[in-house]
Length: 486
Ligand code: NAP
Image (tube, rainbow, N blue to C red; front, top):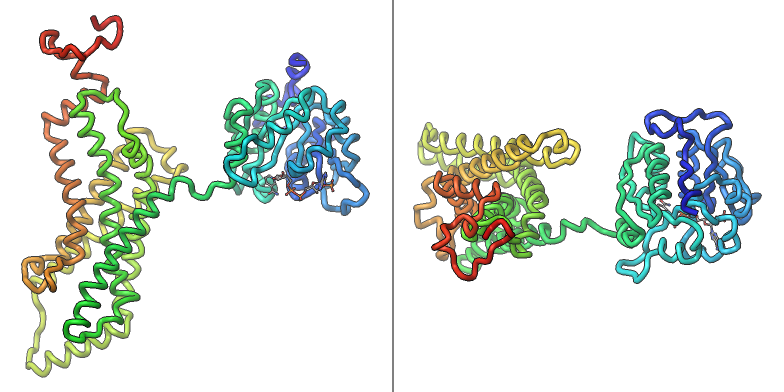
């Protein structure tokens, strides 16, 4: 049987995926069982790529004329499967697989592609494994389920390009890999059919890596918004009836967003520092980090993008501050008081410098953060080599953090040292938000000290303190790591 399967799916001239086969009558015949949305889109794509397509339907006469492109033949299930040279797509729902049992004989030795998706997570067996059990003499390959009917039709110019493929028959799998390439997709070989459950469940996942970063950002937002509400709105109201509730929709949000942006950006760089400290203290890079640190390290990109989102919203909110009716009234009131007080010139040089400096640092910090966000796009990141990527993500990342800290420090200016900045003994939000980023920056500076940086670089190149300690300094508990170590 296996030798049968070694027949190439495509004619030998077609083995180069960049060269489509001739579109006249000679194309390889591929069968699709089912005449629904997926079948139609797949047929369109196959025909456009030079294949001949036979669609198998329970009732071919009922399928509306014009639904499939010219050249696609509509036949009964049995006729379609018999006319397929090697590959048959099962484009029906898994609950209907049993209706195909009558074609077992025609399907012997053929590549049966299961395109179905899971309807629930963590099922015991995948649809593809069930199909393989129903058709033990066919070569079941899982694939194409992560591509929507729309993406199939949209062609190589639009939509998702990755097709996850797995099968226990490597020859059949490579045929489908080749076919996927011919259709303009990027096949990803995920090994044996045991991976089919993961492939089937892939479309059910909803931003699987984003949960914890989003939750962390949301909790930070809630904390700072609540703190702001208490300090600037609720306590003044309860204390002396000052009505600041109008600040809830805009001003309070705009004071919360930069704090969240700054802390989430610090959270991007904190796990890297912790990892470096662990490596320094252990004297090796060959011990695994604790699970929580591994998890955190893997979520840095998400935290960075959420920080960018908060910073972008802060920028937009800040630009709209002067458009508010409240800002107009405040300005008019200030002007009235100034005229009444007989002040002709309200220019305060120190305040001019303060506002220009904090705005400039904010704009630069946001610019650098935008660059980081852009390079986290796979298409841009893939165009950079490792050194460039590290420079952008680490070097420019710390630059963005430093500029954001400076932006906040200039905002706080010397008001931070006045008693009015601490109503009800509560420090301002920006001061709280500065703690973690400053810890991260100080930690980074400490790690850049030559004595630590040199040792860390050595450890990261594979040096281990336990192996390189003089023999008389080694503890009993330090066993030789391999034969050469004695
Ligand atoms: P669909 O539009 O409902 O088509 C399913 C086809 O199955 C029908 O057209 C029908 O064809 C056949 N069928 C219906 N009842 C049947 C029965 N009792 N026994 C045998 N055949 C029956 O569904 P679809 O969207 O094309 O999806 C088909 C498969 O592709 C599913 O497994 C789905 O998970 C998978 N998929 C779909 C998409 C998508 O975007 N649509 C994306 C990825 C994967 P006949 O009447 O001609 O027999």
